[in-house]
Image (tube, helix red, strand yellow):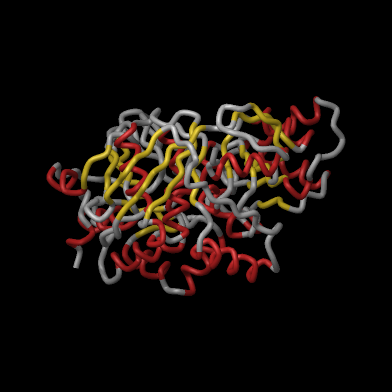
Length: 427
């Protein structure tokens, strides 16, 4: 019987052929913590009596949620991770000196490799599946177990095969493809399953599209999302190797067999897909661009950023949309680059000047606005169109506020008009 790419990754790690449904103890290549989740892991690690990390070069801490610290509590929280990093001489520790949102920063640093098994104490760890790795979120104590032992227990997930066909229209991105899937199957339609993205559309998707696609697999309840290695992946990794003096390790490339078993197959015609807007209060509440325009939805805030859509291509499309234009008078626009490198590149390319001239404010890389922590809190009854990944009640601030999810082109177009707007109409 054939295997899926996910089954092959676990088979390679455990040293025997395994299939969906089996419980396995697998080594882990990269463990990721952040300033919110890592202190709990550190406490559990130290309570266990462990003196050393099982795989120190495979442990990464990224301070990204409340950094620079927003208050005394967040400053003290970050200090726990900083002290631990110094004590254990962590190679992969990132704070203000080289900051970024974890799921944008790790691929940029060449720390995510095809064929890896990766866990992180953050639900959007599934982002890294875009590089052909098995990557999933776990709890802080699960992280601690991996810190102590170098591995963890997994139930090998079943896979849903998603077959995309056709070339996407202008301003249709990976964000729209995943919102379309979530609209089809719901927020629990892929519980404890892998969404394996395939089809003749995939070569049209940039790595940024693929990161957005895999990032929101969790919003369908999935354990992971994954895209197989191809020429786009190869070029991305070559660029990362050149920028960082090499990759963390050599890629282990796997592909699903023709006779692999899937629990479900979804077929999606991308050629006829419009941008998808997720209305409050669930990512599954997707509507077409045409419907959103017809609904004449006024916005108070536009947010472009997060681990979903804070990459250079997002800043590029926003700057192109806003070049020579102004943000609507009643709108505030916040732009949060995913990493310092993205911020620097966007500055060199003139994107930041264009955005600031248009009336946007540009922040440091942070998860703050996305989770309603700081740097973009919504007040009572305010409406935001956001490139983030969740629009639950109170997600970005007041429980009476409303968040609409979109791609970056739609968000930028909406900043100009003050209403959710089709980017093809902006001249």
